[in-house]
Amino acid sequence: MIINLLGTGGADGVPGFYADSRVSRYAMEHGGKDVRTRTAAIVDGHLKLDLGPETLTQMTREGLWIRDWSALIFTHGHDDHFAPAEIQYALFPFTSHECLPFTIYANPQVSARIWGQYPDWPLDVVVTHSFQPFPHGEYVITPIHANHKEDEDSQNILIQDETSTLLYGTDTGIWPDETWAFLEDYAVDVLVLECSEGFRGTAYHGHLDVYDCIRVVERLRRMGVLREESRVVTTHHAHTGDGLHHELEAALNPHGIEVGFDGMTLEF
Image (cartoon, rainbow, N blue to C red; front, side, top):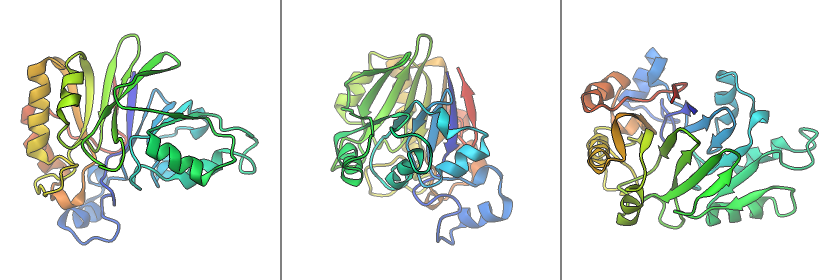
């Protein structure tokens, strides 16, 4: 399995969309791994995770074709993950396709929003529910419940093929008890985990800071979900967390946690 981290930034990216933060200024001046587009990823070149406002830029930057997608899997309905207006460009008159050439998987609330925007369009939308696995080609995909957006079934995504297991956990918060219990039966090869709040945690429950991120990873290791050889990589870094890439590395690397960046590719 291969996952490409197309974007690793928070809701308004890094540098922030209209921000004058220290991290934003540094990213603008130095570029490199400190520049982060909105969080998204793609697995094996065709399982697309979330559809944010920078999708075209991200795919083009990585030399990937959107026409190769077989699935678009939404985690939740916040704007940095869910830009439904982009769906139309896969269909006639923008292309020759009269039916959407990939399947959309989304929770009930996001599915309803898609149908509300495209009530009569030929879309293949499959409603997903946390803890209910579904097949897609050679994969078994299992959403798990995230502690993030309270008015919907916000989901993190387990993806398994015959040899590997990925857990993609952007916008997790501290998982509820039912999610921790569900994960006990899994062994994860790669965990992609948010670290949105960096060194400046907030009262909002729906994101992790550096210290929460470390605690989550350590608990998963004690449970056996993460083994010694499992890789852990961060994503969804907000400029408001006040952490530059190398500063985050200094805090997280000693705990066996790699700091993700736009374009990072993991093969496992």
